[in-house]
Length: 279
Image (cartoon, rainbow, N blue to C red; front, top):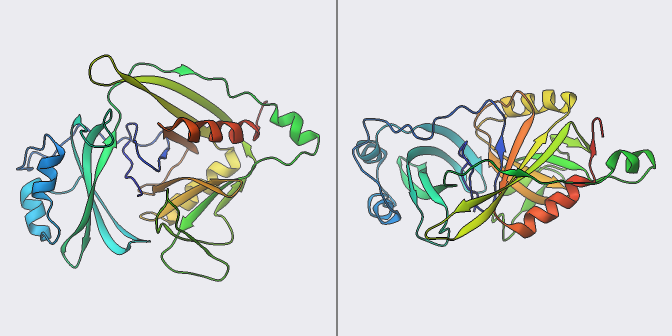
């Protein structure tokens, strides 16, 4: 399932946070909201499939964000509501729920899902990524290629349908990526311990992927031209992350949040082999 992105550390199967420009205040809840939500049961009780949009607005107020989407789930309106975070009690125990996403078709609620965030956490420690990618590039070795694709619900000549366990019915990606590069401006990895109930905690990792000046300019154009669509990132043609594009990203900085250590280690290994400016 494609998870919705919040500027705080989002948690889910697919995770990507983009850009320094994201200034959304996730603690802000419209005063017009008439429903106090403190647990998943409240959401399940109020968000009934088939609920008309006027009832959604009456219960929760005007959405904090909205976009017209057309991906593997078909054309629809997507509304985001941000809530004061509360602890998740389902299979994502150890995270927080910071809101919910609503898909609207034919003027009614078609489906919804929680927006997961990480609990507040202290400063993380930087993890060495290693690698000597500049030397590898100069020696003629093949380097991993990072690709960014715009996902569509329509097939085109040479397109590939992405439908995996991690990305069920995501949609079609074209034969040519919107951005393709084997070099980054900079790359950092941070690890943080996130407290859970009692004395338990879990690890959380954040990759900061800084695109080169050339790719940052292209990335800005791509995000401007494809607002409201889904973007998929692959490394060496392995799908890793997906995100809804909700604004233009001007500085080329991608923040990628992870809680799965195996996925983090795989991404770390591939990123380490990519060329970096100044390395």
